[in-house]
Length: 573
Image (cartoon, rainbow, N blue to C red; front, side, top):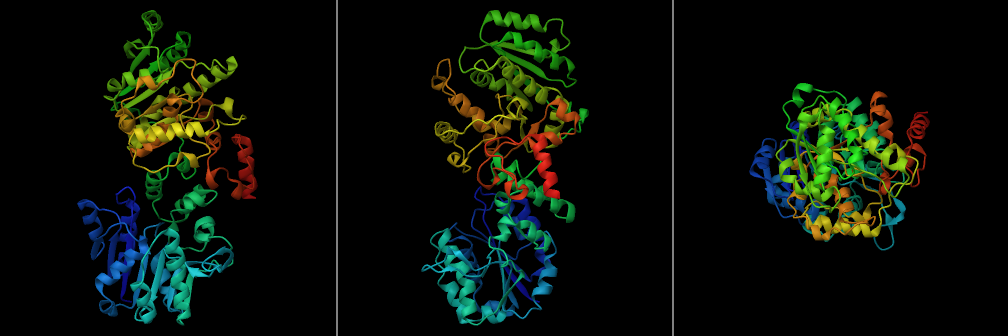
């Protein structure tokens, strides 16, 4: 068969994702010609990469979504030039794939008694309105549509495209995605789909993607990872049953989705495999802000037991405390690691002192930010348990964390697991005033990625403001001139600019194009880490819980390990 493909690309961050090139490379042999139409700018390097698989690359303004781009591609060739082809395929880059062989799909569908076809369809839905109070009619989903010669030679098909003029997203769905199937069926053409989903009420390609995998639909919608109730199932299925490189999925999702979403698409736990030799190639710094000197002995215990080389920088707020700190380190095995003790103003708790020495820390490949935390407003056991859990997560096995940074160049931040003391308590509420602080900070940091903090019910962040990081990952934060006058005096309220910075750490790294990992306490590490995988943060949208797939509601509580495990067992049964 002599086929032509019009492929539409769009990336809101102006880059070309690896999954797109993989897709083009693996379907190239099916088409006599591929026309690549980009609704976002392509660099010269990206243009050259695409040109390796496509006969023509068109760049256009991001106007009219994919239907206007398909229209421009076909009209650019001209209707007469299409007469040489047996079929015209329209596709966009909203899918990962091919997960399964697309050639088998073509061989199957081209034998059917139909004039145009797609991969999946949407059933007639009486609960949703299409136009003029009519329910949504049955239609092919437009991410992949194929038309035989008798269709694209018809006046109905050509008149449809001549009149395409997109106004907004829902206009495109109503008039063009739905409208094209309706129009062609009225013109007497028959359609078919590779996987008929009309037996299901909801959008199967988005919300029941497991069925698509079971029926070997070759492309999986990217949006399904934010709408399907258990997105990690999709990744695991693909990894265990196909040859598709799931690294392409993680790479793209980590770039377009914020940390609170990708927590559910990928195992973010630190890999316990260590490579001591590689850690020797890293310059590592550790910053500790020491306000409470009586807590410092806990750090010294971990520093003495660490076999990783790093320089320790300590900030404190008085000369007296500096002397106490010096005496604490004297005669300790870790004393050679102590690089400098810096006296700073007693303002901004641990955050402002961290900013004060950022230039020193930015000279390192990896840095850690810690402080002598006490939860003075809570019972004494809360603060101590909190501190112990964080230190056990982040300092028990520095070699494993350093190895992760060394092996994963996209890793920007490592945060501690949620301390066990909070497991059975409601998580911190994400209040309107905190959302306003985050929105304001996001603008001040000049972040380009789009995120609406008012949409989030919970947020993932390093509790206690202690974490390891790659300085380049927090560049948007360090480039900002932190106004000390914006820090309110003690005692601090529960929601200040300092709390805003704590909540934004992973989101700033995401803005800079970096991923994150979660380090678990030593006890969890000894148990293989499976407990830590369940102690997740409660999030927003359909991803808040696993209730759809596990028939279990968490409300506003964090899942405890054993309840989560029981849910998984019940799910398997």
